[in-house]
Amino acid sequence: MSAIKVKLVRSRAGRSHDQLAILKGLGLYRMNQERILPDTPATIGMCRKLQHMVEWEKVEDISAKS
Image (cartoon, rainbow, N blue to C red; front, side):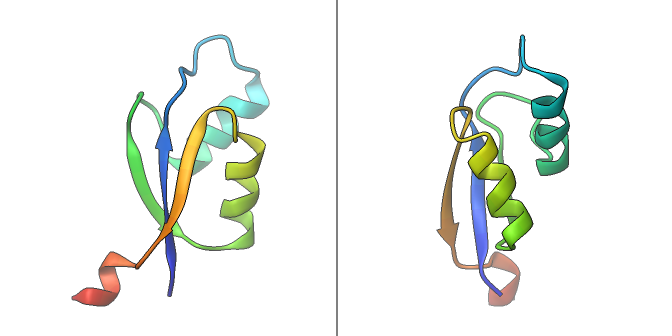
């Protein structure tokens, strides 16, 4: 299964409740925090909603290497 790496590059301060809820759903709480998440349409949609705050790229799933 493929995955994406998401990194929070802009501050959460002053953001709307909807944007904060999406960040919580992605598991991003601090600046420069990175998460490896499954490559699903829902995850891609959340990243696109926050494209001004996050950077993301497709990566090979780390758990598949084990």
